[in-house]
Length: 266
Image (cartoon, rainbow, N blue to C red; front, side, top):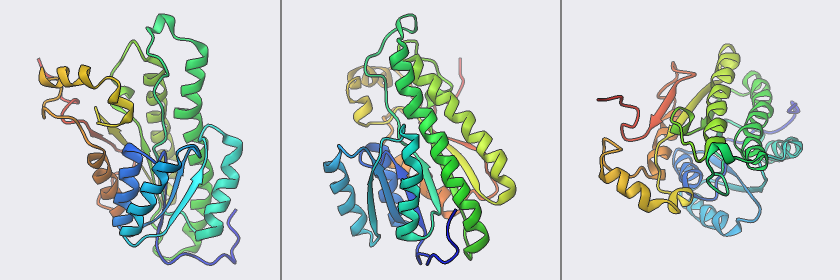
């Protein structure tokens, strides 16, 4: 646990996983604009993305701490959290955003164990145990830091509820992460740690670039009531609102940012 002698950073600190690109990068920039110093976690192979993010965070006047980590490496979590606390003395917000799509879209009847295990480890197991590690530190910090308002956010997907038979392992991993968010919210509510799920819809990122033509056609045909792609900034604005405390009496809530995909209609 955090040593009581540690000096605390004056500013709140946000830890964002999968921070180098897309939704994660936009969230990190948005939180730096809200006054957070940023501990940005991404795979060490994406140095270019981290350099871009570092520049954007610096423009907001916030400190930037890049960390190379594959979130599925659960045995690495302890050292990473310790390094963040060694630098800042606190973690005020965790945004569990890291996630991947299947390397190849296969019908569920052809889904392989290798693909299933890869997505479960990165999209579900890694985030769950990283949140566990951070939550334990937050419990200690709650007792020792004045005006401390800890928040944990799980970035899931509309695929937590909507099926795609050619990427079942992705849907299953996100459904599991949605339940994890609820369980953490339940467990930590009595300790004053707020937990939320942010559920993006069809967002224009590297992950969706390979199937852009398909979604362009579907959006044009009315799949999304608001008739446009979602942007990473749409998700970042939602997370920034949670960081500000705008939803302080709403722990456990699912915030779907999907342009109306959640509307059931005939």
